[in-house]
Length: 310
Ligand SMILES: C[S@@+](CC[C@H](N)C(=O)[O-])C[C@H]1O[C@@H](n2cnc3c(N)ncnc32)[C@H](O)[C@@H]1O
Image (tube, rainbow, N blue to C red; front, side, top):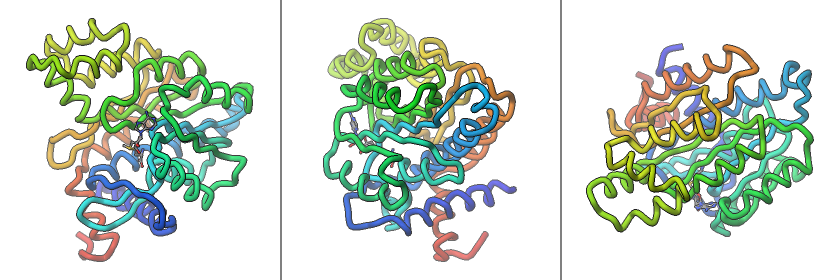
């Protein structure tokens, strides 16, 4: 498959899901590069659920595949400046051909949470999902016990997609301690990099955000930032070492050329599933990094037949 064919396949999946999804509730809007993030979630969720529901997982005693979306949004994303709608991460992750047994979504904004509840009920039966309205940092213990009350040995995929630094480090740590078999996809946005940049240039006003985010490790991390370590590298080390998920890739998502908007950290623990997993990560990184917001926008035009195929 050429890079264009790969991108077309996934842009088509997201726009088809967007077409099918109710438009009458709240939406959010982001630039075309956001599709690359949602494609990454779709791709990872499909690969994850296929393995988590497979024979090998069953024979190891895993009894459920669980999807956790801590910054879920309303389920439908409007693409800035175009008017197209695509599925947001909750609908994308749960609409691949391999289904999760159970999913939990958390959204702090009541209108968005309600919109998501309605939209998901188009796709999933009520016993398969729950939308919690609230601050995911505050309710993570509740989330862990909900999952544990439903399954004995779950295998969990957690997507953490804040806009800036709203997801606290302690949230990922609690999840990591709660579930042995949990994979992370964490979006470190350019918002977090900007905060780090401001601190580095001596603006102390942003320190509380960092301190709140990193808790007791803040001082050590601020020293690293002041020594020029990039914020995504700090996160990457944290996910590998502190959270104990050493295998995976950090994927850069650009809006135009090399201008990075998101670093998607996709990490798992030492793989019990062997090489297909690592290959999947590598393939995802390769394809996502060949595209940018400009090529996604062009592909939306092709898929929507506003422009003839290249
Ligand atoms: C980047 S958007 C998520 C987009 C979504 N993942 C998608 O692909 O469609 C971040 C969302 O997190 C919500 N949010 C912000 N702080 C939150 C918190 N502490 N707990 C839960 N949700 C939060 C925002 O209201 C917003 O809808």
